[in-house]
Image (tube, rainbow, N blue to C red; front, side, top):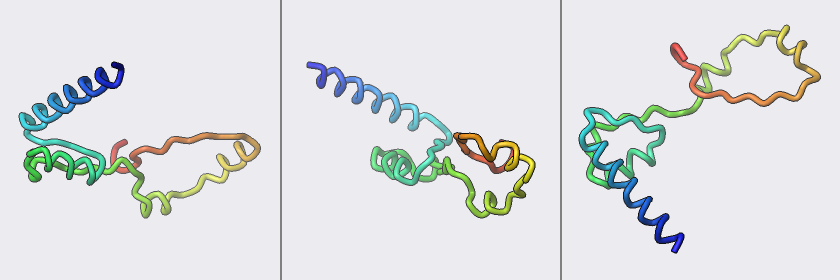
Length: 89
């Protein structure tokens, strides 16, 4: 019974997504796979723009390392999330 509910919710979400993408002037996705999936659903490929949700490795590697920060946190346990670090973000 629970699986039926999940299947209905998923199907409804897919309908909403398809209609929204169909009506949109531009659709932004974060992976090529998402773009391919939408194209298979009938969304025009020229409406879809892939904006990867990853760091530009070349730009990231060129960043200047602040040694004061290294010293300050060298004995600490740190977790960091790095999303998009290009442009104004």
